[in-house]
Structures are given as structure tokens and as C-alpha cells.
Image (cartoon, rainbow, N blue to C red; front, side, top):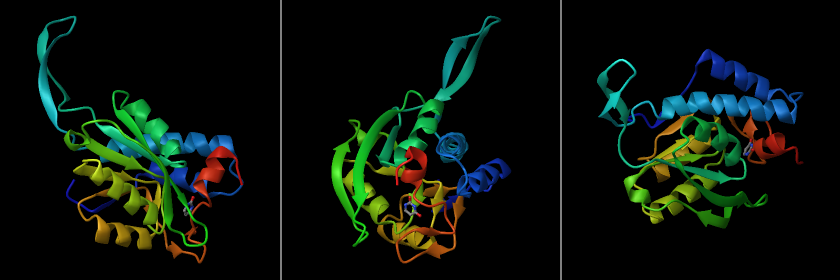
Length: 210
Ligand code: URA
């Protein structure tokens, strides 16, 4: 991927995102929409995966068929909201290895605090796709990518649903080598670190907490 930021402005993505933004949308529908959008975003973030040719036999004859090349890719969910994106992407790429980075946002400092880290082996040989629905201040994303790089990852992409310009800028400064794929870039962050107009707290909305 050559672009630092890719906004997937496909009509289906935008329509589903608008439904997710509405505060009257139920938890169940929110989760379902996130699953659907995550697959459309996954399609984009994997668009240029390396391919190889494998000799296969169809019921009619043999052929040289294109298949994915290289080591299984790694999907890394930034907990807890990342799991909402992870499920759909994992359905689409079922052979992917999966890891988790547990970071919570200190509500006062807005700084990420790590509480869990478990990732697949041989990260240096895999395409690593880190997923988190909301790229807000960028603090969690930058911290998660720091940890992934420390664990050996060299080829990382960041997949989110919504981004704030502040988060995109922070990522570009800290990790210019990590392309971002998102459905939309909103206007700004508010004083609490929420994306405006946004959709509220993605974790609360997908898990029904408050
Ligand atoms: N995290 C969220 O869930 N929502 C925001 O608007 C910002 C960060």
C-alpha cells in the first residue's frame, strides 16, 4: 500500500456507517453493521496481497490457479473495541493468525495503559493488520504499533472504522510506514477525546455497556 491514508467511501460502507452513527441504533444492529462494514474494509486493506500460482484440478481439467502467497497474515485486535472489527475480518480471512493488545484509555490523561499482549509468532514474516474501530487521539494506536514493532512486526497496516484528523496526524508522525484504512475521517475531537460527530463510544455501543 503506497498511500498513508485510504478512505473507503463506497456507498454501502457510507450507508452502513450512517446507520451506526444514529444513537437510536440498537446494540445488536450496531454489531451486525460493524461486522458487515469490517468485511468491506478488509477487502480494501488486503487488495494488494501477494499471490502465487498453484496447480489444481477442477472437475473438468488441471489449471494454474492464483492463491495467496507467503505466511498467514496476523490480525491484531486492540481490545476491547477491536474485537468488533476483528470478527468480520477473521470470517473473511479464516486462516489468519490472531493476536490481542489490551490497552485502556485513562479517561483523565487520555493516555493508553497496557494490560494484555499476546500475538502470533514470526510477526516479522507476516503482514500484520491492527484493528480498532476508532482512531481518535491516536495514542492507543501509536502505543499498540510500538508494541507490535517491538515484537518484530515490520509490515503493519491499521484498519479502523472512523478516524479523527488528530489521530491520523499523530499516526503519520509516529508511524509513517503504517498505512491507515478507514471508512471516514470526521471533523475533530471534542474535549473528552471523542470523535465529532462520531458515533459515541464504540465499545459501549457494541457490547451494551455504559
Ligand atoms: N473511542 C470511541 O469509542 N469513540 C470515540 O469517539 C473516541 C474514542
